[in-house]
Image (cartoon, rainbow, N blue to C red; front, side):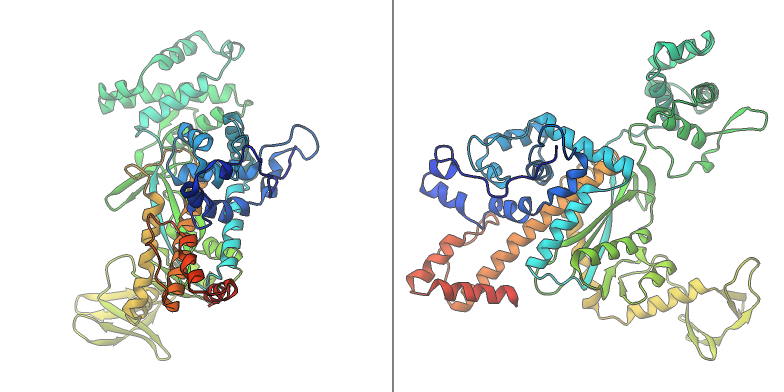
Length: 557
């Protein structure tokens, strides 16, 4: 049964942590600027538990554990890069971690491991069945409240993407097909296996005990190709015989078979040429969501994560949106959903977007018609000719010789609605299409922008670095697109919290610098020691009301 957590838990007179600490420890524990108190206030207490109520029965059953505590544990796990055992150890014995989660008494119960894993599983199953991203909704809701509290300017944004590998081994074609077949065969019970012929059953048993990696190492290409043919035949027999199962392993086998084989008219099975295999094909049966991408020198079997953040010269900047797609999805796909999601989070209209050239496309020109798109580069080599459409027609300038030409409108290509132009050169005719004109206009516009404006996008690369900092060799420890999204949201919530801590520290530093009051000790380890800073004010007989008014004025400005 779903039940909301108590926002104001009662302190136990005999088990309250502050009652057991000595003065210096109590000072740090009670410091509202310390990370654990800020995490509790800015993240845990902002979690809307009703978002997750759909995972529980509303009337019957035992009450659920605190959703705030469980989601907070997920965020802390990814923030400090803990294993599950380290997470529960810190949550049980680390007073600062317990305080961050709202466990202020020593006898406050912590959810057990099974409860923690059950919530993660329910979130995963719910999104897989209904397509609703609960962690994404929680991220948007928390960030929206933070933006309102700190008056974040969301009219300008910047975005960038990052390729990360999935937590899978690099499988060859033979290994993918072999593992997928064996995974399905092992799910069959004794009655299902009895429907197979003795020859097929013997072949499947041999494949089940075979180690495909060793087979790949000791076999030539021709030998592997010869082994793939009978595997395709037996896979087709299984798909035909057990077509009514529709289990996860069956659907995976069906997908791999259709990607790797084709059925001819005479019902013969033929292995597809490698050129026909899509980059979206299964890279590993243990992570069917991952895809392949070759980007420069980087070859990734995994996912592409897109980060969008506010871009203000003054004030606080926060991450507003996280998108996770397969690695072979181009960056152009991220633009429209990232802008729409950011406007929903900030409640502000976006006026300017800073991104690199990989995000530009004609389709995005239409959806971003009223937005100033600042691209820092254009993909591909720069053309020799500069193209400009004028009322008199297309004017072409040779950047190498400086000559100007007036292009001639020519007949459209077959099955094309776009106009084409051409010029005559000593070597023949040179044709230009709409894409060439658009690219030339974008390059000319980019050269006309100030260098400082083009550099505003660079800071989002630091955000990408912080997001992927815990990764080893740019490889995630999770499998599946849903789990990658949960990981990315947790990391981004922590990055936003660190920015809030640093921003609050800067505000207080400016306040005391303006008032001419030195602090007693410098900031250390990124922690904010407000209590020590307030002491000089009282010693100089400043009223508390004056101090609060000055602080509030700085927040408003």
